[in-house]
Length: 487
Image (tube, rainbow, N blue to C red; front, side, top):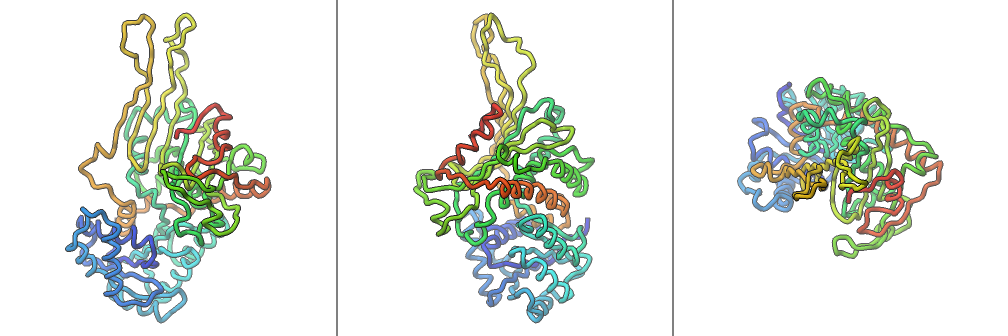
């Protein structure tokens, strides 16, 4: 592994992501002594301001977004001293030259560039870096989603960056991969002998993945409308969870081996057709209602005009490979849901024959269920059958829970921001938790088939009241197969 980068260059440094996540993550890494010696943070945005004015803004953001018991004025002062600010606009050669002067003499110790900007600025920013002499074999570049809006535009973005950087220098960010509980899926599957032998179509009936949000547009009007839940959440977060959950065991825990197996799964997703989307997908859009006791407006009211953008999507996906043939995967995500929740449910098949059946009398035998909650709580819950205490000759079974709270089990460990892991790996050059180009293209290939199917089928959004789990057709999507959503 190469030496960690000694300089971190952030574009879009005045944006919401930088204030809420990136600078608090840098603060935590500094507090824990995890940043390299002689570390320098160069922040950049279009706004013209002095170093001190920007540093003041960062310190205010730290006080606002860090937990009160985590904020330490002394650490904030130390972080402040590491920061330099340079206003830069894409295409302005003089400003890029001034930026290069800020980094002069440090390139040989590595430069990590983080693009927290719209994707339309990725290639122009990279070209500005190249023209200013800031791209070397030790320069790394990280890109925030979205990487395009379809396969064609994602290729355009990747071609623009790929013309200046080798693939091993490019770090495509999906912040879900920085979450401890998502990484723990690897440990659960490949670190425990009781699960992997059953992790296939022979033992599993179906799988559910739910990512629910209680918020609405929340200031993302200009971005979200025309993008929708399928592109915003399914294309990246949910498909990344799905690929980790279903990939074959990699030979070793390294970037190439892990991502090789993920892309195989993504390429095995059965494409949707215009006929399939009618029975395998649901589009929804929230209307006025109540979320957690608060009255909220509908999407069209927030937007200020009618729109056909979906704020909810439910899908029945199929993976056409040896391990998963015949197992349906039910995916759903939406805004203005009853609660904020990210969860995976693995429904196992029932036992082949019940010995607890006598004189035509059933005993309540239920198939086993594994529930993995990613947020806001973090736990793994296994539902198993147990004998109900008693002296009856007939054995009565009841479902009991084996519950492992990861929050309680690791109570002494601070719950980290996902970006802490990702920034640390970027500086170190470890791509395991970043998305490779062929993964992105495999994801978009499947998503594009759904979007094209919707267009051909002229599928419109179905309304659902805020505070509900989507339209009633989403319930029918899974219940047609004899299953139910776990709410």
